[in-house]
Length: 632
Image (cartoon, rainbow, N blue to C red; front, side, top):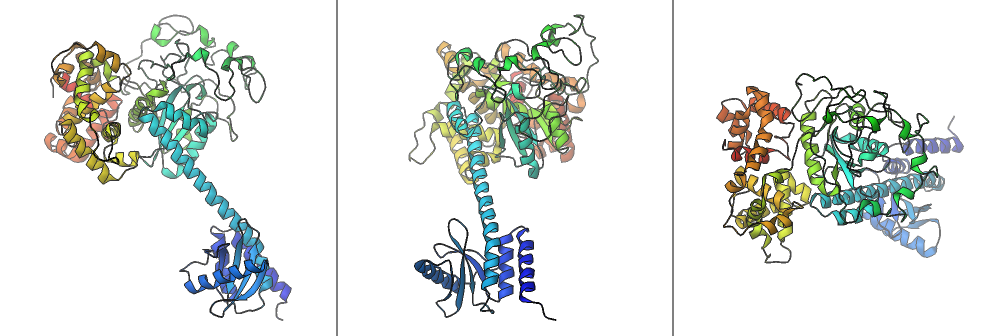
């Protein structure tokens, strides 16, 4: 018994419903309609342009026929019609419920009475088309926001803090005045998942950017106060707002560097600033959800006020504890037992007990952070393949330094059992230079600073210095950082060779000198130091590195390698630096295989707590240190 028309219609509707749940539903449904009706089915826009069709090449004759039919239907003002096309083939048209208006067209179907089928298909197609259009719009918005966030990070990296703050203020969240930089190395498909979790744990206050240079890195600028409570910075860091020692837990690898400056970039005192959105002083604001002042709120887990809570490990109030650097025990004031020399890198100290104070429920939905888990530990638990490097607390203007710190910590985290590490060194190379050093830096960069481009489209002095800085940090990957073609990057580097008179494109010695000159030239105290510099003859790099301060700095840089023993000693690194940091040449000079040389340098990375083989690399500091001590 043949199927009734109602049964056939039900089967058609069921087939369309099933196709609507597939990826690429619109194309799949148009392909099904083409086979079902015997004529090509397409979606046509209000202007007559074919927007979508079945898989395969589009037929120009079909495009002409549907364009003419749409123009005629619009002239008539009808929602549907069967019209003769330009080549005599009938065109069945029906308007979809979309904005802007879209039409379903079938050209020359075998069944001239397919109006009911097209009407049923039009309803499902309209829904699927709107969904696909919404998804395309979401992706465009996401891409635009991603590029805007990347631009903010780029502005911070080149020192344009006010411009970065203006853009970030429009995009939200506003950039915090004090940050920690997290660099997460993870599988590229999981970058979005990690970014969402960081944003949730930071209460929406983190600035998260997929790395424009490395597709498997996520960069997060996290306000310390919204990071894991009790573990937001170095164990011996100072509170950026008060200058007093910050109470920290022992969850993540700790750092030993000095507390950076945190003065605001606009010259105002932090106590006098008002909130950019409300115009009120932070001390007077109430919580947006509870309406209470933060000072009056109680802890969501314990029901007690934070000021009265005691440390979960010691039972004492944090305010009564003393810092480990003072030599007193947090609980009873007695001197702690001196631990044995750890086997971990000199710049990283392993977790003491893996705990931190309990954290409140996560902000922004989703499961809360488990108690006693810091943000970096949470990330490596969430994505076991990931590695996390964390910087010190720094002022926003020091974002480039914090990024380098996080990269160095990441180099240690790759080989650490915990798969995470916090930076534990000192990147402040300006301590080795007196006023004469700043004069030397100014003289070295002077040809570039005085350069006047011959054409308006050519890069000017500041753009050339930005190119030099990016190239020294990322090498060939600087083209992705600067958004320029690799040939353009190579041409600019050759131009810098000519301007500076040193082969920065191929000599590690020239690169190290240029790196030091850029650090000194961009230091906040550079202008004052130049004003104090005596009128001396031309200063040389040897004179800059020959001061007692430079010797002290150099010995501190190399001490971890000396203490690590011959397996990761100075000789391997010295040979590598003499080979202009080229691994094949270093392996040949050492008489070992290429993997063997790489393994030795990886052990040196662990000993130093710094990155050598991955940019940004510590090779410039090590070259300068060995040159200062006359051992290169």
